[in-house]
Length: 292
Length: 277
Image 1: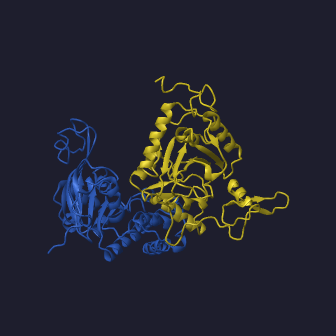
Image 2 (image 1 turned 90 degrees about the horizontal axis):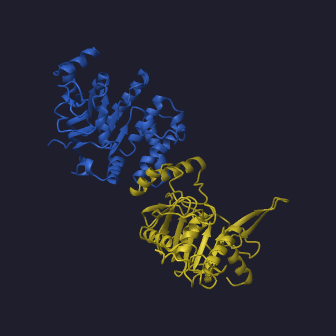
Image 3 (image 1 turned 45 degrees about the vertical axis):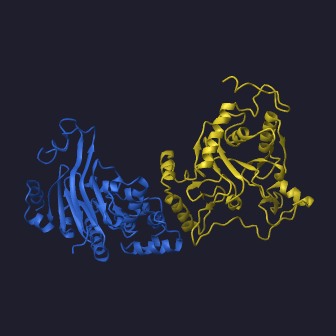
Protein backbone atom coordinates (compact mmCIF):
# COMPACT_ATOMS: atom_id res chain seq x y z
CA UNK A 1 0.00 0.00 0.00
CA UNK A 2 2.63 2.49 1.03
CA UNK A 3 4.74 1.43 -1.90
CA UNK A 4 2.12 2.47 -4.42
CA UNK A 5 1.18 5.72 -2.80
CA UNK A 6 4.72 6.77 -1.99
CA UNK A 7 5.22 10.45 -2.31
CA UNK A 8 7.59 10.39 -5.22
CA UNK A 9 8.37 13.93 -6.22
CA UNK A 10 11.89 13.12 -7.34
CA UNK A 11 11.19 13.52 -11.02
CA UNK A 12 12.56 16.43 -12.88
CA UNK A 13 10.07 19.21 -13.18
CA UNK A 14 7.35 17.75 -10.94
CA UNK A 15 6.62 19.46 -7.65
CA UNK A 16 8.27 17.76 -4.66
CA UNK A 17 6.03 16.31 -1.99
CA UNK A 18 3.31 15.21 -4.38
CA UNK A 19 2.77 11.94 -6.23
CA UNK A 20 3.37 12.11 -9.98
CA UNK A 21 0.27 13.72 -11.51
CA UNK A 22 -1.21 14.69 -8.13
CA UNK A 23 -3.61 11.72 -7.78
CA UNK A 24 -2.50 8.66 -5.82
CA UNK A 25 -1.94 5.50 -7.82
CA UNK A 26 -5.06 3.74 -6.55
CA UNK A 27 -7.25 6.59 -7.77
CA UNK A 28 -5.55 6.62 -11.16
CA UNK A 29 -5.99 2.88 -11.39
CA UNK A 30 -9.72 3.15 -10.62
CA UNK A 31 -10.21 5.90 -13.17
CA UNK A 32 -8.29 3.99 -15.84
CA UNK A 33 -10.41 0.93 -15.14
CA UNK A 34 -13.57 3.02 -15.55
CA UNK A 35 -12.17 4.48 -18.78
CA UNK A 36 -11.65 0.96 -20.11
CA UNK A 37 -15.24 0.11 -19.31
CA UNK A 38 -16.43 3.33 -20.96
CA UNK A 39 -14.42 2.50 -24.08
CA UNK A 40 -15.86 -1.01 -24.12
CA UNK A 41 -19.45 0.35 -24.10
CA UNK A 42 -19.33 3.49 -26.25
CA UNK A 43 -21.60 6.26 -24.95
CA UNK A 44 -22.47 4.44 -21.70
CA UNK A 45 -22.01 6.52 -18.55
CA UNK A 46 -19.77 4.71 -16.06
CA UNK A 47 -20.06 5.92 -12.46
CA UNK A 48 -16.73 6.54 -10.71
CA UNK A 49 -15.46 7.85 -7.40
CA UNK A 50 -14.80 11.47 -8.26
CA UNK A 51 -12.10 12.96 -6.01
CA UNK A 52 -11.81 16.38 -4.48
CA UNK A 53 -9.46 18.40 -6.68
CA UNK A 54 -7.68 21.67 -6.06
CA UNK A 55 -10.28 23.45 -8.14
CA UNK A 56 -14.01 23.82 -7.62
CA UNK A 57 -16.46 21.25 -8.97
CA UNK A 58 -17.93 22.57 -12.18
CA UNK A 59 -14.58 24.03 -13.29
CA UNK A 60 -13.23 20.96 -15.01
CA UNK A 61 -12.57 18.52 -12.16
CA UNK A 62 -13.78 15.64 -14.35
CA UNK A 63 -11.54 16.45 -17.27
CA UNK A 64 -8.55 17.01 -15.06
CA UNK A 65 -8.97 13.70 -13.24
CA UNK A 66 -8.91 11.90 -16.61
CA UNK A 67 -5.91 13.88 -17.79
CA UNK A 68 -3.98 13.21 -14.57
CA UNK A 69 -4.85 9.51 -14.70
CA UNK A 70 -3.70 8.91 -18.28
CA UNK A 71 -0.79 11.32 -18.60
CA UNK A 72 2.76 9.93 -18.83
CA UNK A 73 6.15 11.57 -18.86
CA UNK A 74 6.42 11.64 -22.63
CA UNK A 75 3.02 13.25 -23.20
CA UNK A 76 2.53 16.77 -24.51
CA UNK A 77 -0.51 18.55 -23.12
CA UNK A 78 -2.76 21.18 -24.64
CA UNK A 79 -5.67 22.68 -22.67
CA UNK A 80 -8.35 24.83 -24.25
CA UNK A 81 -11.43 26.58 -22.97
CA UNK A 82 -14.00 27.65 -25.61
CA UNK A 83 -11.26 27.18 -28.20
CA UNK A 84 -8.79 29.44 -26.42
CA UNK A 85 -5.47 28.36 -24.87
CA UNK A 86 -5.22 31.58 -22.93
CA UNK A 87 -8.44 31.72 -20.88
CA UNK A 88 -8.05 31.63 -17.11
CA UNK A 89 -9.50 28.15 -16.74
CA UNK A 90 -7.26 26.69 -19.44
CA UNK A 91 -4.11 28.38 -18.13
CA UNK A 92 -4.71 27.25 -14.56
CA UNK A 93 -5.42 23.64 -15.49
CA UNK A 94 -2.35 23.57 -17.74
CA UNK A 95 -0.18 25.04 -14.98
CA UNK A 96 -1.49 22.53 -12.44
CA UNK A 97 -0.77 19.52 -14.64
CA UNK A 98 2.56 20.92 -15.65
CA UNK A 99 3.64 21.48 -12.01
CA UNK A 100 2.40 18.07 -10.92
CA UNK A 101 4.02 16.11 -13.76
CA UNK A 102 6.66 18.25 -15.39
CA UNK A 103 5.33 17.30 -18.82
CA UNK A 104 5.67 19.59 -21.77
CA UNK A 105 2.70 21.77 -22.67
CA UNK A 106 1.83 23.35 -25.98
CA UNK A 107 -0.81 25.41 -27.71
CA UNK A 108 -0.10 23.67 -31.03
CA UNK A 109 -2.88 21.15 -31.70
CA UNK A 110 -0.67 19.07 -34.00
CA UNK A 111 2.06 18.41 -31.45
CA UNK A 112 -0.20 17.66 -28.46
CA UNK A 113 -0.81 14.04 -27.43
CA UNK A 114 -3.53 14.88 -24.89
CA UNK A 115 -5.94 17.76 -25.45
CA UNK A 116 -8.21 18.68 -22.55
CA UNK A 117 -11.08 20.82 -23.66
CA UNK A 118 -14.15 22.68 -22.58
CA UNK A 119 -16.83 23.45 -25.22
CA UNK A 120 -14.79 22.92 -28.40
CA UNK A 121 -12.93 20.43 -30.58
CA UNK A 122 -9.86 21.97 -32.26
CA UNK A 123 -10.35 22.87 -35.92
CA UNK A 124 -7.18 21.09 -37.03
CA UNK A 125 -7.62 17.47 -38.09
CA UNK A 126 -6.73 15.15 -35.22
CA UNK A 127 -4.89 11.85 -35.48
CA UNK A 128 -5.14 8.45 -33.84
CA UNK A 129 -2.09 9.26 -31.69
CA UNK A 130 -4.08 11.90 -29.82
CA UNK A 131 -6.61 11.72 -26.99
CA UNK A 132 -9.35 14.30 -26.46
CA UNK A 133 -10.49 14.86 -22.86
CA UNK A 134 -13.80 16.69 -22.45
CA UNK A 135 -14.97 18.54 -19.35
CA UNK A 136 -18.65 17.69 -18.93
CA UNK A 137 -21.15 19.66 -16.81
CA UNK A 138 -24.22 17.44 -17.48
CA UNK A 139 -23.46 13.88 -18.57
CA UNK A 140 -27.11 12.77 -18.79
CA UNK A 141 -28.71 13.74 -22.13
CA UNK A 142 -32.15 12.75 -20.83
CA UNK A 143 -31.99 14.87 -17.68
CA UNK A 144 -33.84 17.82 -19.21
CA UNK A 145 -36.86 15.61 -19.90
CA UNK A 146 -36.61 13.18 -16.97
CA UNK A 147 -35.45 14.27 -13.51
CA UNK A 148 -35.15 10.77 -12.01
CA UNK A 149 -31.79 9.00 -12.31
CA UNK A 150 -33.51 5.65 -11.77
CA UNK A 151 -35.82 6.28 -14.70
CA UNK A 152 -33.10 7.58 -17.07
CA UNK A 153 -30.96 4.53 -16.32
CA UNK A 154 -33.87 2.29 -17.20
CA UNK A 155 -34.44 4.29 -20.38
CA UNK A 156 -30.81 3.78 -21.42
CA UNK A 157 -30.95 0.09 -20.51
CA UNK A 158 -33.99 -0.43 -22.70
CA UNK A 159 -32.85 2.07 -25.35
CA UNK A 160 -36.16 3.86 -24.75
CA UNK A 161 -35.46 7.26 -26.25
CA UNK A 162 -38.97 8.11 -27.48
CA UNK A 163 -39.32 10.92 -24.93
CA UNK A 164 -36.20 12.61 -26.34
CA UNK A 165 -37.65 12.27 -29.82
CA UNK A 166 -40.90 13.72 -28.48
CA UNK A 167 -38.92 16.64 -27.04
CA UNK A 168 -37.48 17.33 -30.52
CA UNK A 169 -40.93 16.96 -32.12
CA UNK A 170 -42.43 19.49 -29.69
CA UNK A 171 -39.53 21.85 -30.42
CA UNK A 172 -40.31 21.67 -34.15
CA UNK A 173 -44.04 22.19 -33.55
CA UNK A 174 -43.42 25.22 -31.36
CA UNK A 175 -40.52 26.85 -33.17
CA UNK A 176 -40.46 25.38 -36.66
CA UNK A 177 -37.01 23.87 -36.08
CA UNK A 178 -34.88 22.12 -33.50
CA UNK A 179 -33.60 24.86 -31.22
CA UNK A 180 -30.93 22.94 -29.29
CA UNK A 181 -27.65 24.86 -29.54
CA UNK A 182 -24.85 23.16 -27.66
CA UNK A 183 -25.15 19.70 -26.04
CA UNK A 184 -26.95 18.24 -29.06
CA UNK A 185 -28.05 14.66 -28.23
CA UNK A 186 -26.26 12.00 -30.29
CA UNK A 187 -26.66 8.26 -30.67
CA UNK A 188 -23.31 6.53 -30.20
CA UNK A 189 -22.60 3.30 -32.02
CA UNK A 190 -26.34 2.99 -32.74
CA UNK A 191 -27.02 2.20 -29.09
CA UNK A 192 -26.53 4.80 -26.33
CA UNK A 193 -27.82 8.35 -26.35
CA UNK A 194 -24.99 10.67 -25.34
CA UNK A 195 -24.54 14.28 -24.32
CA UNK A 196 -21.46 15.36 -26.31
CA UNK A 197 -20.73 18.04 -23.64
CA UNK A 198 -21.52 21.67 -24.51
CA UNK A 199 -19.66 21.66 -27.83
CA UNK A 200 -21.48 23.65 -30.52
CA UNK A 201 -23.44 21.74 -33.18
CA UNK A 202 -20.53 22.65 -35.47
CA UNK A 203 -18.30 20.11 -33.70
CA UNK A 204 -20.81 17.26 -33.47
CA UNK A 205 -20.21 15.78 -36.95
CA UNK A 206 -16.49 15.80 -36.15
CA UNK A 207 -17.03 13.14 -33.49
CA UNK A 208 -18.44 10.76 -36.11
CA UNK A 209 -15.93 8.00 -36.96
CA UNK A 210 -13.11 10.25 -35.77
CA UNK A 211 -9.70 8.54 -35.46
CA UNK A 212 -9.28 10.00 -31.95
CA UNK A 213 -10.15 8.48 -28.60
CA UNK A 214 -12.63 10.85 -26.92
CA UNK A 215 -12.95 10.65 -23.15
CA UNK A 216 -15.69 12.55 -21.35
CA UNK A 217 -15.79 13.11 -17.62
CA UNK A 218 -18.13 14.92 -15.26
CA UNK A 219 -16.44 15.43 -11.89
CA UNK A 220 -19.47 16.83 -10.10
CA UNK A 221 -21.85 14.22 -11.54
CA UNK A 222 -19.26 11.42 -11.18
CA UNK A 223 -19.58 9.90 -14.66
CA UNK A 224 -17.08 8.83 -17.30
CA UNK A 225 -18.02 7.97 -20.90
CA UNK A 226 -16.16 7.57 -24.15
CA UNK A 227 -16.32 7.60 -27.90
CA UNK A 228 -13.57 5.23 -29.09
CA UNK A 229 -11.81 5.85 -32.43
CA UNK A 230 -13.88 5.29 -35.58
CA UNK A 231 -17.17 4.96 -33.65
CA UNK A 232 -20.35 6.20 -35.37
CA UNK A 233 -21.84 9.24 -33.61
CA UNK A 234 -25.14 10.38 -35.09
CA UNK A 235 -27.05 13.47 -33.97
CA UNK A 236 -30.80 12.78 -33.63
CA UNK A 237 -32.66 14.10 -36.65
CA UNK A 238 -35.93 13.60 -38.48
CA UNK A 239 -36.17 12.67 -42.16
CA UNK A 240 -37.72 16.04 -42.93
CA UNK A 241 -35.98 18.10 -40.22
CA UNK A 242 -32.29 17.40 -40.51
CA UNK A 243 -29.57 18.19 -38.01
CA UNK A 244 -27.86 21.44 -39.00
CA UNK A 245 -24.61 23.04 -37.90
CA UNK A 246 -24.32 26.76 -37.19
CA UNK A 247 -24.44 28.85 -40.34
CA UNK A 248 -21.58 31.33 -40.83
CA UNK A 249 -22.13 31.88 -44.54
CA UNK A 250 -20.95 35.31 -45.63
CA UNK A 251 -18.89 35.79 -42.48
CA UNK A 252 -15.12 35.55 -42.14
CA UNK A 253 -12.68 35.78 -39.25
CA UNK A 254 -11.44 39.32 -38.92
CA UNK A 255 -7.93 38.18 -38.02
CA UNK A 256 -7.15 35.26 -40.32
CA UNK A 257 -9.87 35.64 -42.95
CA UNK A 258 -11.06 32.06 -42.43
CA UNK A 259 -14.54 31.20 -43.69
CA UNK A 260 -14.56 27.50 -42.76
CA UNK A 261 -14.12 27.61 -38.97
CA UNK A 262 -16.42 28.11 -35.99
CA UNK A 263 -16.63 31.88 -35.39
CA UNK A 264 -17.31 33.81 -32.20
CA UNK A 265 -19.51 36.87 -32.61
CA UNK A 266 -18.17 39.87 -30.73
CA UNK A 267 -20.46 42.83 -30.36
CA UNK A 268 -18.91 46.25 -30.03
CA UNK A 269 -20.58 47.86 -26.99
CA UNK A 270 -20.12 51.37 -28.36
CA UNK A 271 -21.32 50.95 -31.92
CA UNK A 272 -23.39 47.77 -31.62
CA UNK A 273 -21.59 46.29 -34.63
CA UNK A 274 -20.79 42.57 -34.87
CA UNK A 275 -17.28 41.33 -35.48
CA UNK A 276 -16.35 37.71 -36.07
CA UNK A 277 -13.24 35.91 -34.84
CA UNK A 278 -12.14 32.27 -34.91
CA UNK A 279 -13.04 30.50 -31.66
CA UNK A 280 -9.95 28.26 -32.01
CA UNK A 281 -7.20 30.80 -31.26
CA UNK A 282 -4.17 28.62 -31.96
CA UNK A 283 -5.57 27.59 -35.36
CA UNK A 284 -6.31 31.25 -36.12
CA UNK A 285 -2.70 32.20 -35.33
CA UNK A 286 -1.41 29.42 -37.55
CA UNK A 287 -3.54 30.71 -40.40
CA UNK A 288 -2.28 34.23 -39.80
CA UNK A 289 1.29 32.93 -40.06
CA UNK A 290 0.28 31.04 -43.18
CA UNK A 291 0.99 27.63 -41.66
CA UNK A 292 -2.50 26.11 -41.89
CA UNK B 1 -62.69 -22.43 -39.58
CA UNK B 2 -62.99 -20.18 -36.57
CA UNK B 3 -60.51 -17.30 -36.42
CA UNK B 4 -57.83 -17.34 -33.72
CA UNK B 5 -58.47 -15.19 -30.65
CA UNK B 6 -56.59 -11.88 -30.61
CA UNK B 7 -55.74 -12.39 -26.96
CA UNK B 8 -55.81 -15.45 -24.73
CA UNK B 9 -55.40 -15.14 -20.98
CA UNK B 10 -55.01 -18.17 -18.75
CA UNK B 11 -54.93 -18.39 -14.97
CA UNK B 12 -53.91 -14.77 -14.51
CA UNK B 13 -53.27 -14.22 -10.80
CA UNK B 14 -52.12 -11.20 -8.86
CA UNK B 15 -51.50 -11.40 -5.12
CA UNK B 16 -50.24 -8.55 -2.93
CA UNK B 17 -48.43 -9.49 0.25
CA UNK B 18 -46.34 -12.33 1.62
CA UNK B 19 -48.48 -15.13 0.03
CA UNK B 20 -49.03 -18.56 1.48
CA UNK B 21 -50.13 -21.84 -0.09
CA UNK B 22 -53.70 -21.36 1.13
CA UNK B 23 -54.25 -17.85 -0.22
CA UNK B 24 -56.26 -18.86 -3.26
CA UNK B 25 -58.23 -21.58 -1.47
CA UNK B 26 -59.27 -19.27 1.38
CA UNK B 27 -60.41 -16.33 -0.69
CA UNK B 28 -62.96 -15.62 -3.39
CA UNK B 29 -66.71 -15.11 -3.63
CA UNK B 30 -67.45 -18.21 -1.52
CA UNK B 31 -65.54 -16.64 1.35
CA UNK B 32 -66.86 -13.16 0.66
CA UNK B 33 -63.38 -11.69 0.77
CA UNK B 34 -60.16 -11.41 -1.19
CA UNK B 35 -57.98 -11.15 1.93
CA UNK B 36 -56.30 -14.40 2.94
CA UNK B 37 -57.23 -15.17 6.58
CA UNK B 38 -53.96 -17.06 7.11
CA UNK B 39 -51.32 -14.61 5.90
CA UNK B 40 -53.30 -11.44 5.22
CA UNK B 41 -52.27 -11.23 1.55
CA UNK B 42 -54.70 -9.61 -0.85
CA UNK B 43 -55.70 -11.75 -3.80
CA UNK B 44 -56.54 -9.04 -6.34
CA UNK B 45 -57.44 -11.61 -8.95
CA UNK B 46 -56.90 -15.34 -9.40
CA UNK B 47 -57.40 -17.98 -12.08
CA UNK B 48 -58.65 -15.46 -14.61
CA UNK B 49 -59.01 -17.27 -17.93
CA UNK B 50 -60.65 -15.83 -21.02
CA UNK B 51 -60.06 -14.96 -24.64
CA UNK B 52 -61.10 -12.13 -26.94
CA UNK B 53 -61.70 -12.36 -30.68
CA UNK B 54 -60.59 -9.73 -33.18
CA UNK B 55 -63.29 -7.08 -33.50
CA UNK B 56 -65.05 -8.26 -30.36
CA UNK B 57 -65.80 -6.18 -27.27
CA UNK B 58 -65.50 -8.15 -24.06
CA UNK B 59 -67.05 -6.49 -21.01
CA UNK B 60 -65.71 -7.02 -17.51
CA UNK B 61 -68.06 -5.91 -14.72
CA UNK B 62 -67.78 -6.10 -11.00
CA UNK B 63 -67.90 -3.96 -7.93
CA UNK B 64 -65.13 -1.67 -6.84
CA UNK B 65 -62.16 -3.75 -5.64
CA UNK B 66 -63.19 -6.88 -7.52
CA UNK B 67 -59.96 -6.93 -9.53
CA UNK B 68 -61.15 -5.50 -12.85
CA UNK B 69 -58.44 -2.93 -13.27
CA UNK B 70 -55.76 -5.35 -12.05
CA UNK B 71 -56.46 -7.54 -15.07
CA UNK B 72 -55.98 -4.79 -17.67
CA UNK B 73 -53.05 -3.24 -15.82
CA UNK B 74 -51.29 -6.62 -15.90
CA UNK B 75 -52.07 -6.99 -19.60
CA UNK B 76 -50.68 -3.51 -20.25
CA UNK B 77 -47.53 -4.35 -18.20
CA UNK B 78 -48.28 -1.56 -15.72
CA UNK B 79 -47.89 -4.20 -13.02
CA UNK B 80 -46.38 -7.68 -12.87
CA UNK B 81 -48.80 -10.57 -12.39
CA UNK B 82 -47.99 -13.17 -9.74
CA UNK B 83 -48.79 -15.99 -12.12
CA UNK B 84 -50.56 -16.96 -15.29
CA UNK B 85 -50.01 -16.46 -18.97
CA UNK B 86 -51.25 -14.27 -21.80
CA UNK B 87 -50.79 -14.83 -25.53
CA UNK B 88 -51.20 -12.20 -28.19
CA UNK B 89 -52.00 -13.73 -31.55
CA UNK B 90 -50.10 -11.01 -33.39
CA UNK B 91 -46.86 -11.36 -31.43
CA UNK B 92 -46.32 -15.10 -31.67
CA UNK B 93 -46.82 -17.94 -29.24
CA UNK B 94 -44.81 -16.62 -26.31
CA UNK B 95 -46.31 -15.82 -22.93
CA UNK B 96 -46.10 -12.02 -23.01
CA UNK B 97 -45.68 -11.84 -19.22
CA UNK B 98 -42.31 -13.59 -19.57
CA UNK B 99 -40.83 -11.23 -22.16
CA UNK B 100 -38.00 -8.95 -21.06
CA UNK B 101 -38.94 -5.35 -20.34
CA UNK B 102 -37.63 -4.08 -23.68
CA UNK B 103 -39.80 -6.52 -25.62
CA UNK B 104 -42.76 -5.84 -23.34
CA UNK B 105 -42.45 -2.19 -24.26
CA UNK B 106 -42.31 -3.11 -27.95
CA UNK B 107 -45.49 -5.20 -27.57
CA UNK B 108 -47.17 -2.33 -25.75
CA UNK B 109 -46.13 0.21 -28.38
CA UNK B 110 -47.05 -1.90 -31.38
CA UNK B 111 -49.99 -4.04 -30.36
CA UNK B 112 -51.73 -2.54 -27.33
CA UNK B 113 -53.76 0.58 -26.70
CA UNK B 114 -54.87 1.65 -23.23
CA UNK B 115 -57.44 4.17 -22.09
CA UNK B 116 -57.39 4.90 -18.37
CA UNK B 117 -60.28 6.27 -16.36
CA UNK B 118 -58.16 9.30 -15.56
CA UNK B 119 -56.68 10.93 -18.70
CA UNK B 120 -53.83 12.11 -16.50
CA UNK B 121 -52.49 8.55 -16.44
CA UNK B 122 -52.56 8.00 -20.17
CA UNK B 123 -51.57 11.45 -21.37
CA UNK B 124 -48.71 13.85 -20.84
CA UNK B 125 -50.86 16.85 -20.02
CA UNK B 126 -48.10 19.39 -20.71
CA UNK B 127 -47.20 18.02 -24.12
CA UNK B 128 -49.39 19.02 -27.09
CA UNK B 129 -52.21 16.67 -28.14
CA UNK B 130 -50.41 16.01 -31.40
CA UNK B 131 -47.25 15.34 -29.38
CA UNK B 132 -49.06 12.79 -27.23
CA UNK B 133 -49.97 10.84 -30.33
CA UNK B 134 -46.50 11.41 -31.79
CA UNK B 135 -44.97 9.80 -28.71
CA UNK B 136 -46.56 6.45 -29.59
CA UNK B 137 -45.52 6.76 -33.23
CA UNK B 138 -41.98 7.82 -32.32
CA UNK B 139 -41.70 4.84 -30.01
CA UNK B 140 -42.69 2.65 -32.94
CA UNK B 141 -39.88 4.15 -35.04
CA UNK B 142 -41.60 6.92 -37.05
CA UNK B 143 -38.98 9.53 -37.99
CA UNK B 144 -40.78 11.87 -40.36
CA UNK B 145 -42.46 14.88 -38.76
CA UNK B 146 -44.75 15.43 -41.76
CA UNK B 147 -46.04 11.87 -41.67
CA UNK B 148 -46.43 11.98 -37.89
CA UNK B 149 -48.52 15.14 -38.13
CA UNK B 150 -50.69 13.72 -40.90
CA UNK B 151 -51.38 10.64 -38.81
CA UNK B 152 -52.03 12.84 -35.76
CA UNK B 153 -54.60 14.89 -37.67
CA UNK B 154 -56.31 11.76 -38.93
CA UNK B 155 -56.52 10.34 -35.39
CA UNK B 156 -57.73 13.56 -33.75
CA UNK B 157 -60.37 14.15 -36.40
CA UNK B 158 -62.05 10.86 -35.52
CA UNK B 159 -63.01 11.83 -31.94
CA UNK B 160 -63.87 15.34 -33.18
CA UNK B 161 -60.97 17.20 -31.60
CA UNK B 162 -60.75 20.57 -33.41
CA UNK B 163 -57.53 20.39 -35.44
CA UNK B 164 -56.59 23.96 -34.62
CA UNK B 165 -56.08 22.74 -31.05
CA UNK B 166 -53.72 19.95 -32.10
CA UNK B 167 -50.68 21.84 -30.83
CA UNK B 168 -52.31 22.79 -27.55
CA UNK B 169 -51.62 20.87 -24.34
CA UNK B 170 -54.49 18.67 -23.05
CA UNK B 171 -54.11 20.45 -19.71
CA UNK B 172 -56.26 23.22 -21.24
CA UNK B 173 -59.00 20.79 -22.33
CA UNK B 174 -62.21 19.70 -20.60
CA UNK B 175 -62.33 16.22 -19.06
CA UNK B 176 -64.37 14.79 -21.92
CA UNK B 177 -62.04 16.24 -24.51
CA UNK B 178 -58.99 14.90 -22.66
CA UNK B 179 -60.61 11.49 -22.70
CA UNK B 180 -61.11 11.72 -26.47
CA UNK B 181 -57.46 12.70 -26.95
CA UNK B 182 -56.51 9.68 -24.84
CA UNK B 183 -58.58 7.42 -27.10
CA UNK B 184 -56.93 8.94 -30.18
CA UNK B 185 -53.53 8.24 -28.61
CA UNK B 186 -54.49 4.65 -27.80
CA UNK B 187 -55.44 4.13 -31.45
CA UNK B 188 -52.21 5.65 -32.81
CA UNK B 189 -50.58 2.39 -33.86
CA UNK B 190 -53.75 0.54 -34.90
CA UNK B 191 -53.60 -1.68 -31.81
CA UNK B 192 -54.67 -5.30 -32.00
CA UNK B 193 -56.01 -5.13 -28.47
CA UNK B 194 -57.56 -2.03 -26.93
CA UNK B 195 -57.90 -1.92 -23.15
CA UNK B 196 -60.57 0.44 -21.86
CA UNK B 197 -60.57 0.98 -18.11
CA UNK B 198 -63.70 2.76 -16.88
CA UNK B 199 -63.47 5.18 -19.74
CA UNK B 200 -66.77 6.94 -19.13
CA UNK B 201 -66.77 6.97 -15.34
CA UNK B 202 -66.87 10.48 -13.96
CA UNK B 203 -68.02 12.10 -17.19
CA UNK B 204 -71.40 13.74 -17.59
CA UNK B 205 -74.10 11.89 -19.51
CA UNK B 206 -73.91 13.78 -22.81
CA UNK B 207 -70.11 13.40 -22.92
CA UNK B 208 -70.49 9.71 -22.03
CA UNK B 209 -72.81 9.26 -24.99
CA UNK B 210 -70.26 10.77 -27.40
CA UNK B 211 -67.46 8.58 -26.06
CA UNK B 212 -69.61 5.46 -26.36
CA UNK B 213 -70.52 6.42 -29.93
CA UNK B 214 -66.83 6.80 -30.63
CA UNK B 215 -66.11 3.29 -29.33
CA UNK B 216 -68.91 1.92 -31.54
CA UNK B 217 -67.41 3.71 -34.50
CA UNK B 218 -63.99 2.24 -33.71
CA UNK B 219 -65.52 -1.22 -33.60
CA UNK B 220 -67.07 -0.69 -37.02
CA UNK B 221 -63.91 0.63 -38.60
CA UNK B 222 -61.15 -1.50 -37.04
CA UNK B 223 -60.51 -5.09 -36.20
CA UNK B 224 -59.23 -4.37 -32.70
CA UNK B 225 -60.26 -6.66 -29.88
CA UNK B 226 -61.47 -4.58 -26.95
CA UNK B 227 -61.65 -5.26 -23.26
CA UNK B 228 -64.08 -2.91 -21.60
CA UNK B 229 -63.86 -2.53 -17.84
CA UNK B 230 -66.82 -0.88 -16.18
CA UNK B 231 -69.15 -1.07 -13.23
CA UNK B 232 -71.95 0.35 -15.36
CA UNK B 233 -74.20 -2.36 -16.76
CA UNK B 234 -75.71 0.18 -19.18
CA UNK B 235 -72.36 0.55 -20.93
CA UNK B 236 -71.94 -3.22 -21.07
CA UNK B 237 -75.40 -3.65 -22.54
CA UNK B 238 -74.74 -1.04 -25.21
CA UNK B 239 -71.31 -2.19 -26.31
CA UNK B 240 -70.18 -5.67 -25.41
CA UNK B 241 -71.11 -9.00 -26.94
CA UNK B 242 -69.74 -11.11 -24.14
CA UNK B 243 -69.36 -10.26 -20.47
CA UNK B 244 -67.35 -11.48 -17.53
CA UNK B 245 -68.69 -10.87 -14.04
CA UNK B 246 -66.03 -10.52 -11.38
CA UNK B 247 -66.39 -10.81 -7.62
CA UNK B 248 -63.63 -10.87 -5.02
CA UNK B 249 -61.01 -11.41 -7.70
CA UNK B 250 -62.70 -14.40 -9.39
CA UNK B 251 -64.82 -14.88 -12.46
CA UNK B 252 -68.29 -15.84 -11.17
CA UNK B 253 -70.06 -15.77 -14.48
CA UNK B 254 -69.11 -15.50 -18.13
CA UNK B 255 -71.30 -15.54 -21.21
CA UNK B 256 -73.27 -13.57 -23.77
CA UNK B 257 -74.17 -10.15 -22.43
CA UNK B 258 -77.88 -10.53 -23.18
CA UNK B 259 -77.99 -13.85 -21.40
CA UNK B 260 -76.23 -12.51 -18.35
CA UNK B 261 -78.49 -9.48 -18.12
CA UNK B 262 -81.73 -11.39 -18.81
CA UNK B 263 -81.01 -14.59 -16.98
CA UNK B 264 -78.27 -14.11 -14.41
CA UNK B 265 -77.18 -17.39 -12.84
CA UNK B 266 -74.87 -16.41 -10.04
CA UNK B 267 -76.30 -14.85 -6.92
CA UNK B 268 -74.02 -11.86 -7.21
CA UNK B 269 -74.90 -11.23 -10.86
CA UNK B 270 -78.59 -11.35 -9.92
CA UNK B 271 -77.95 -8.74 -7.27
CA UNK B 272 -76.03 -6.61 -9.72
CA UNK B 273 -78.72 -6.80 -12.40
CA UNK B 274 -81.53 -6.17 -9.93
CA UNK B 275 -79.88 -3.18 -8.36
CA UNK B 276 -79.65 -1.53 -11.76
CA UNK B 277 -83.29 -2.13 -12.56
